[in-house]
Length: 129
Image 1 (cartoon, helix red, strand yellow):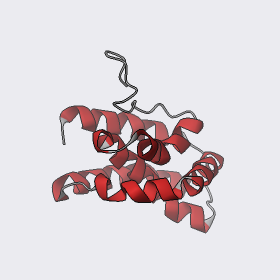
Image 2 (tube, helix red, strand yellow):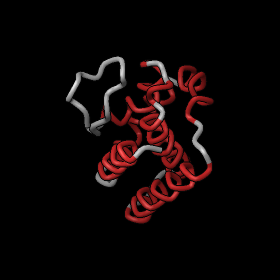
Image 3 (cartoon, helix red, strand yellow):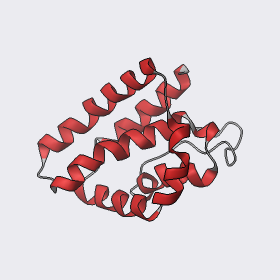
Image 4 (cartoon, helix red, strand yellow):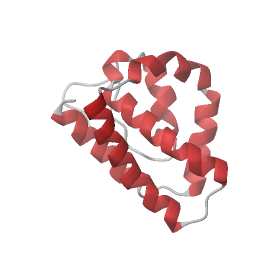
């Protein structure tokens, strides 16, 4: 993984800290609506062992305090880790995903105000997160 990708993932994760249970309900509804598109992109999200280990630790370090701070519906608590990890993987692998596949992974977070890096097909030169 390139350093810029780590910076982008860290910026994404820093925003996750401020999300509420209600925000995650919005993300959940969005992800459920996009399930088939996400499914087609899943194989493209795979990371090498070292990169996946780094990402898993960062996601756990971000999401665990959220779960300890407030009461979560059981099903949403479990799936929120997957949503955050999937969006982070999509940010890293966005050059492999179609615009639709990328948005199906990150669009729910965009809806609740998280700033997400643009997909390569829509990025304007010099305007990156």
